[in-house]
Length: 252
Image (cartoon, rainbow, N blue to C red; front, top):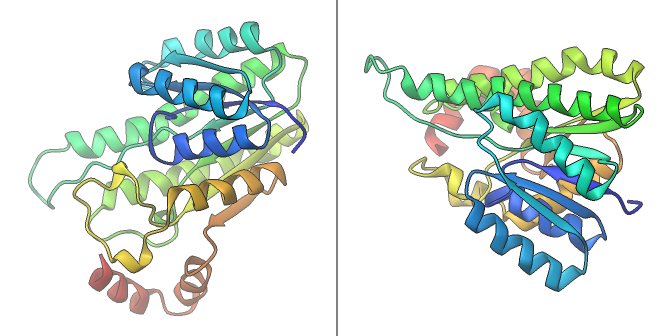
């Protein structure tokens, strides 16, 4: 990747943090946002010291949609042209079926879908201000393909965000804005919380972040990361979806 400026949301932990660190190792300057400013500032200082790149940070709760564009524009003032916006901030809220409390479901959709759309709108405004062109990378999930039995609304929200960005891709392509949709499998990050799954399926965030970076660098339309075992499972799902769902219910 030619040295460039990358903006990453949800960068204070998990895949966002890992992607920030790997991008910096490749010489990229960073604009990082997250709710937890103290964590973010510590990460930024470590990256500056280790990789000698520019790192700017800002506190942002992506559910506060009116604050997104001013912060994105502020990064342009600090770093110059922003070449890629990585929409990574997300949540996984669980609830038992029919417990009559929809707050967790609403939270999943508000952050994973509506806030992702708000970040995309802000990125498009930013790219237009810069003269056109750019790249939007959005982090969906492998659960967009195979719904997780114990995380129904999370799976649905990740399928929705993938569908949305596939839908706007042709329009953005006309404006020279590339769209990359990333589908991570299970990763050892805090987002899993109390969600239980087989340890054999868990990937290290540093490894997944490297694959994400490579997909973004290559301007791939879509990428399942890591490819194994998830591409194999995807192939099985196309042939025998019910069998795979039964298998998933045993793993998860």
